Image (tube, rainbow, N blue to C red):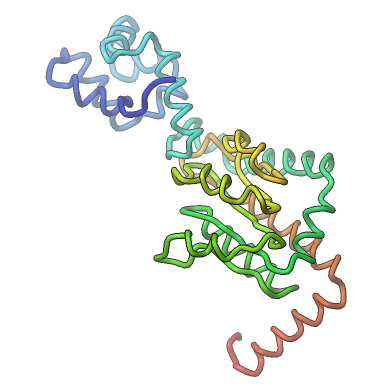
Length: 272
């Protein structure tokens, strides 16, 4: 694995002053369009910069890469970690990656018994939902949806606070949902270790499967690696599926909760 502290951009900037005119032409092109390494061949890059294919290969080796494939693999690893990198032409991506991810999720759910998860979501004394960075909005949405059918659902950590106090408040009977999609905080593994005595559902992307042994339940949302920025259609769909199953399990009790919420909206004149 290439050290990302020496990424393509860093390497070009470090060597720029000593590059030949042809190499600088390549450097300028790739600084503006690093994704071209992934979607163009060495020959196509050469043609775009009006240099020879040999010049491209020499430039890549000058930066410290073995060859074009080595450089391409580094950029793919960077995208896999969640950093924005275009890995395919946008018009070729559109929604097909989301559709593919949803199909993978459907296949996973068909081969997984969700009953233990649904029962915990419905019957645990309290639900604790934890998410950081881009997983925080997902955790917040999960909490908001669950609140439509049951009480005692808490979102952790409270904004601006560390999580140590919150972890101390989690009882053994509480059910913990941790969402960790891409670029997780450094303490993520430690967080799972702290919760070993609890029943934990981990919702993650394909890169988080390494934590499978630290969670009671694992559900994987395969994320799109072609567009620069992530779509959260798959984890959002999973959340909706889990909450709807919980609502159906709770039946009349869920209806009472949602009706009370609707009445509050009306009494407070909060919605259109």
